[in-house]
Length: 135
Image (cartoon, rainbow, N blue to C red; front, side):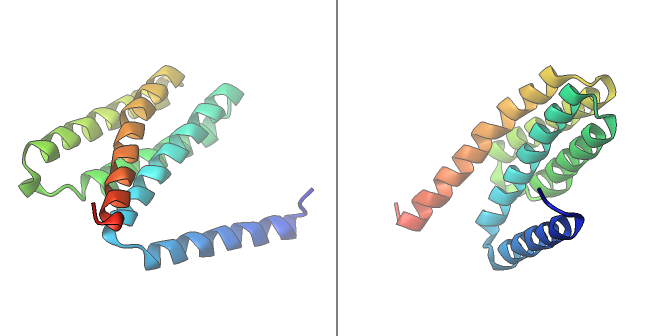
């Protein structure tokens, strides 16, 4: 088992690892990290709901919504045309559903948003891997 000191060390290591990842990431990788963070927090919120941990649920959903709103949605380029418009609509809908999920401890709503965001994240990662291969 971890002692409080080793738990703090693990947390510090995790923070440094994430910060290093952000510092060295290109813009495409940063978007992938935003998707990963949103999904991770939605999964954490679902677990918290199942345990009845209201504080953890609220914190995780708040982080997921901020990532979607201030990260993914804010990164959309209006010059992206129809794709940008559709992504913005998905992000706005996701934020509304997560807000309701938080109010009502609704795991179905969280699962719905995960089902919307996961394919986008996978597509984004696929695009990046193809670009790195030169395809």
